[in-house]
Image (cartoon, helix red, strand yellow):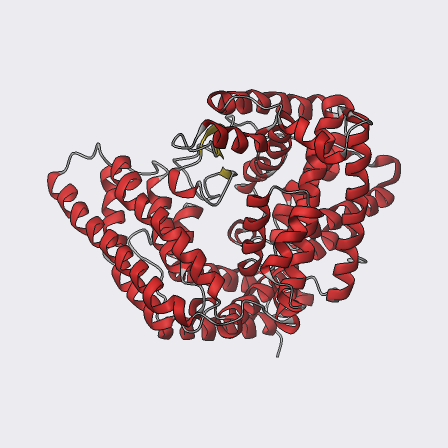
Length: 552
């Protein structure tokens, strides 16, 4: 029997969110909710089973609410939460990453204290107490991993082994350095004990991974077509057939590949496309000037958006460019680190960029810096900062509901940032200079291959090596990046959400422009899109157009 109204829905949504905080205390810390800062995620099988049962029960209660009795925003949030509950059940009960992904345990330990360490939302001594509380629970977490992991894919275990030294280094170096100024001898001594125990536990975990788990890691990483489709529908509310999605991805790849060749010809018609790219990549700042160069580029980006009335930028301090923290450098070249929407004190935002390792040879450092050619710096900064992720963050505190502050559809979040790369050039940024279009298209090709590889690796038997070849050839990526991207696809089946989201936003913009006619403006479209929060894109279409229609 259906019942309810907005009050009933909001009460249930609040209950779901509070349950999420309790089960994901590290996520709560990131969001700016510090009630559970002394807790660590529980990966026991009993806790996992309880989580599945809770998600099913919440789904049933959401189903029982009468959508006809809800306002539009409540109705959209209800459908969003229904999908989130479905995704939780599928992830925990069908995909069962907790039984396959050894790295998730060590990463969960590291992230749980990194979220406390990185922001001064409370005095250092108070935050160190929370670190100690979480550290005391980490040896048990790693012991739980040994009980849970069973016949994982070999590549998952290999990745865990590759990552484990970075996690240990974080506890050995970064964490103690962050709290070196705490003047509480008893607390510092307690931290020394708990931290040493974690370092030892990670060392023992690595030994177990190498000697025990790796030899029996013979499972498959592939989700299969049914599970892939169900998860995509649950997380993003996208129910397009997989063969149709592949058609869309491959058509966009062809379009961008042709545009890449044509753009290279504009730069030098007498030189091969590959050689043109190498010439463009050689035009980069020295490593020592990368951060300053990027900080200056952000000012130009922001001013262009304001001058061309592309989007409203709320009053804010500029994002601060900094070097990527050491334990993150092996897995990311650039990232945006913003506080959660409920964070009231530590509101600074950081744009992380990875520099070459100073221990490398000059030739290795020079090769690494080719990724940071000037046009690439601009394109990545558009994605991460203006008008990409940082602008999304500036709106986050004012998202209309708590549901949208806590949960987000990745096709919306990453789709927007990827859309922004192309949109900014279309609006005249860098006045048509072809090197900047080449950088935008190189990233677009990368995201197209992700879209294709994610589906084919998980539903059509594509191997990691086949994906690597595709990234290197059709994606025009250097060998190290191609391999890293192929490995990522094994554990991130939906990393096509960049292109998927971008194409859906382009279609939405076209349909919105048709609806608005002469009243259409780019700024109004962008402001309304960001302001409503990271809903799944079919729900955004309903909110902005009055009906869903065709997503692509």
